[in-house]
Image 1 (spheres, helix red, strand yellow):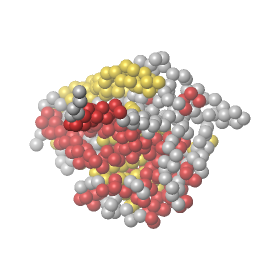
Image 2: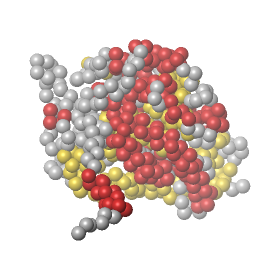
Image 3: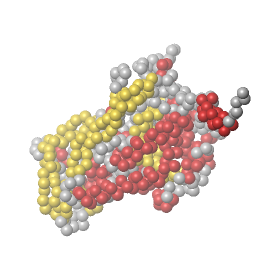
Image 4: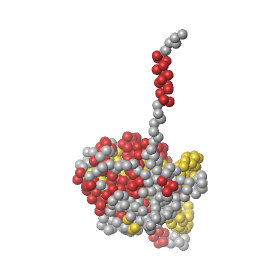
Length: 566
């Protein structure tokens, strides 16, 4: 007996079986250890090569060579404008390049363009030059190569070399590059600890010429970690200061980071994740920001930038990998961030502007009654459990045979790490100490240094034209002490607030009205109990000595007012 064949049913059956019959797609190639894709940086004429490329990744660019590279790019493209951000004590200039199509040279032109402004920074620590080199390669690709389309929606400001004096303070290093700059500037100040106190020309110039005028929606700050045990090519963090408005921070952590992580794996073959480290157990139990020296304090540029209601990223590559690998990791992550910003720039700007409005509205609605509060210190809580790539064997450093140079990477770390499941994800910023947010602050005329530091950061400060009476509270300082915080010796006050009614303030007094978008920044700087505000960094140290605070209780000189009599 003949069997009839139902053609339609046969086609349907083959369609259903097709996925099983087709060979499985090749697994995504992931580059581990020191490996990078061959020819990842493209082929360029000699004049467009960086110092790292020319020397087989054994050297990094000096300050002069960075300027020469920027000069080469501006002669090759009509889409570059140069900003001289500052001049150091050694008479070197800190240069940034504005990349835009069409060319944009002023913040006013940028605002009119409707495009998203992004700021990218490298070499704030000159012994961490990988981001510097990656940024120069990216600039080349954006202006002359395959990434030109980014300028369709973005204005990209790039400062490859923020620490220009430290870059040329050379010392011998282990591995490559063979010569490296210093962690500090010419005054021996760590620039990435100057975000609040603003003592250096470099940070004051960055604030005044870029942050305050161009108002970037997002900033990226590139760094290098030490010898780590995790298996990620680079780690990222955003602002985790509890006093910052959570909107921009949550957007970066919940939306941008997951999308960029997937894109970096797919496009560049790299595993990237949160800037953390594990505890010393095996298997590890904790994946923590604090293990990687990230903090809920505002002393770092990226953390302080979050107090401005804007988005920030700090990223660090493992220190034990090769120089080329570290450059490639920064290149990949920054490219992913820029791709995301180009596609979601309007959404990102909307989040930041909404935070601006919310901060001002909260002050206007609740500060005068004393109901409004914010945090002056914090810690890290748990997001739950997370699976993490970790190497089981210790990351030991050994001499290269026949040399006196230590090898960068242990042999077992050239392969894939293990996936350890169920670590406690300790990265959630939680406020632990809070204070009342006033309607504003009144600062004595003789403390004009405070007004200068606030204005350098963009906070609006006015001068009273006539005497006023104010009601609020004063902080009574019972003891001025010191304690370790974030790796630094900080001033710590003991005391408390007391109500104060109808106190008179003369003309010439500085007034900071917190009904402004940078209210959280001003609050953090001026509050006497802030973890690392002006008090913590010693801005008031001379005043406390002159007032005799070592012998008796004194009143903190900045007055918190809730109401000013008309």
